[in-house]
Length: 313
Image (cartoon, rainbow, N blue to C red; front, top):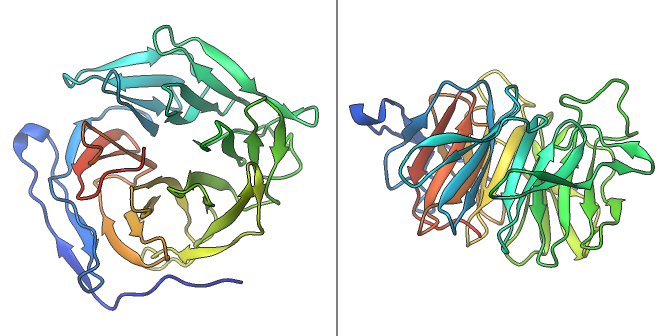
């Protein structure tokens, strides 16, 4: 059964001036649903630009590094605490999504067909899964990890061979022991993915529809049928644009990268804000010592902005 997000009759635009030192000027447009909105508490800043297509931001708290990918250049970069950006891996096999696990492992979705774990010092990749039922994955896109150490990941069609190696564009689960199962039916380009703070709901953001999905997690790697979590606010003149990446905060609010910016929704599917960037966002994560810095990869640039609620970690 499909539902819709609450619609807000008015949008109040909050314009933030970006200082010259950041080399960035932008506007943050925030939907104001009564007094229930979530708005930035700092300025949107450009960290660095000049990339081909940035994706997969992931914060590693021990070394205070932000990892992110540049897909066309098959690179993974790292932002150090001193603000310098260096290359972590120059042979990422078109890695898209990244995640740092609670025990400090860096996992990635290589669109060339596998889910891997990277050594944080050498960038050596160890393959965790590369096929299902004897066939390679289409092009693993994004991933999230449950409390048992199992990995949910999406496998759409972007950069995949044709015809698709798999019979469906779907969500898969890699159990802690390594077994792989398909846990969803065919979806229209499943992309961003995330778990609720209690691990009882799995959110999946398809890229080719306005309706975002949620599944009940009945057991590790076991999902209910999907239902509509919310319907994204659309750009003018469009009705079916979807989403890309997703992050959650400690209260379970969702931050979804879309054509108009990072759209923020409550756990009940009500829109709580929209944060706009100079470029269309692709993915999002939280980091920093207090986990309140929202990092956004947006086409050729990496951006950050301080938010009022810490990210889930």
